[in-house]
Image (cartoon, rainbow, N blue to C red; front, side, top):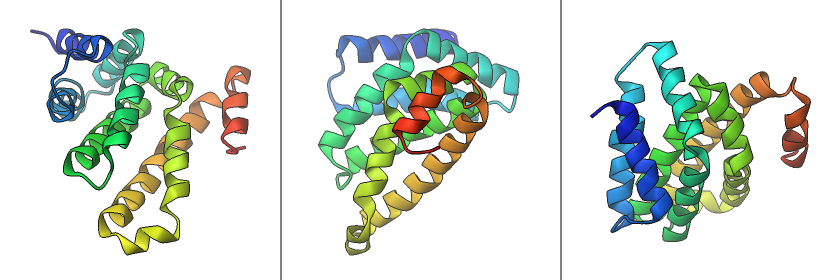
Length: 168
């Protein structure tokens, strides 16, 4: 089965909500979506994968999964690992594909990550897991925002997104 077919199958499971538990779907996302990115250095192939994910609606469905993982909580193993996997997918494919970066902006994922950073604040020093998660999130968000900012800000259709996020 080809990589893009596996990606499509995994996103269809997310669309249908037919997964048995959060850990199982997180594992499928890691194996079928995140792993192919890591297995190649070919930028054109990475872009092809990212474009494909955008075309099948992955940003919206992965953002919805991120919201569910947030409900599980960062303090739990399943929640933290799941959020890390989803954010890694966002980071990698937004860097490779303009379509993916654009649709991630439209999905609300950047706003979620900014809100997460607001929650980190001073309370993060009390909880080691939260502190590590906030540091990882800060790096991820800065990289995604800078990449998306560089690619998309010149297009008028995205200026409202960055104004809403108070990025520009």
